[in-house]
Image 1 (tube, rainbow, N blue to C red):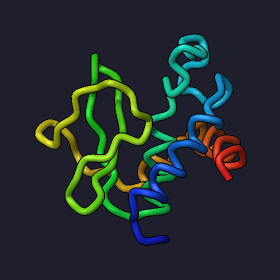
Image 2 (cartoon, rainbow, N blue to C red; image 1 turned 180 degrees about the horizontal axis):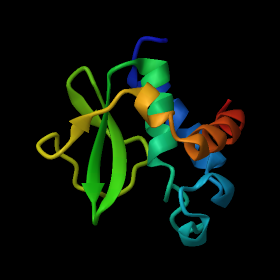
Image 3 (cartoon, one colour; image 1 turned 120 degrees about the horizontal axis):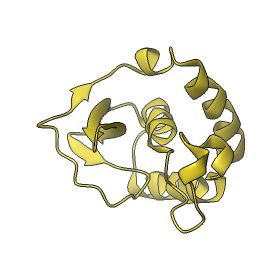
Image 4 (cartoon, rainbow, N blue to C red; image 1 turned 120 degrees about the vertical axis):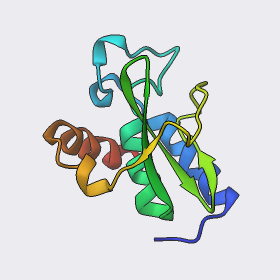
Length: 116
């Protein structure tokens, strides 16, 4: 785990932008080059949590789970998707809980290889 700094965070987000692909999206059929972060919020949030600690949260947007982090008390949405997030309707979730899902583990392995 590394200490959170804005420079390290921005660098990681740039690597995410290069790593986004349809094969690692939650639902590859909805992924597009115009919205490359689509379906990656679970993977991105897990990596941010692994690298910088903080808390991992799950909320629901249009009935679908959406994952994000807090670091030093601030909401962090590393996918840069334009969603309105608050802690009001979110729940803390452990990375272990999220990683119980075999498809997330498979997608995470592939995505992490591209992120480096």
